[in-house]
Amino acid sequence: MKVDVAEHLQSADEFLRESEHLIAGDFFRGAVGRAYYAMFHAATAALLSRGIERSSHHGNLAAFGERLVKPGLVEPRFHTYIREAFARRSECDYLSFTAADESEARATLQRAKEFVEVCRSLCQ
Image (cartoon, rainbow, N blue to C red; front, side):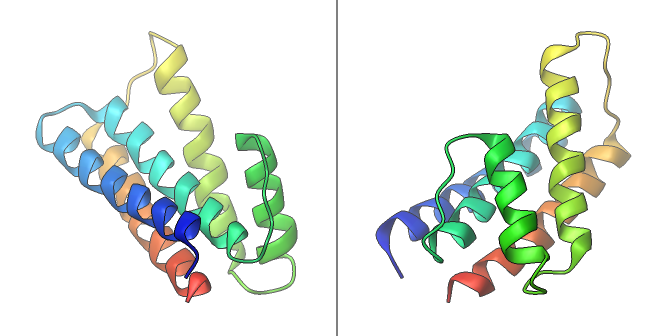
């Protein structure tokens, strides 16, 4: 496995752990954001393992759909997971009146864990 791919997978694992700690501390907005970043780094790793590099979050999400979901390498629900997490992370980070509750944070974290594992298997 290429070093950059392994580093992104390591970052994904770290963000998953951070999300768990934030949930334990009742920081649900932050937990949603960290779960998204776990997915982002896992998607980046999966794309890099195929020689695909994008420079933005939007580019990464689009390439994930076009290059991994559309050809059938990844189930479409995973593209939905990362797109929804990206939108919620943006809302939680930039809109002060936006709240996330424990249920949403835990659901986003669970989706992120599944997402990371799917991407990890693509990198093998």
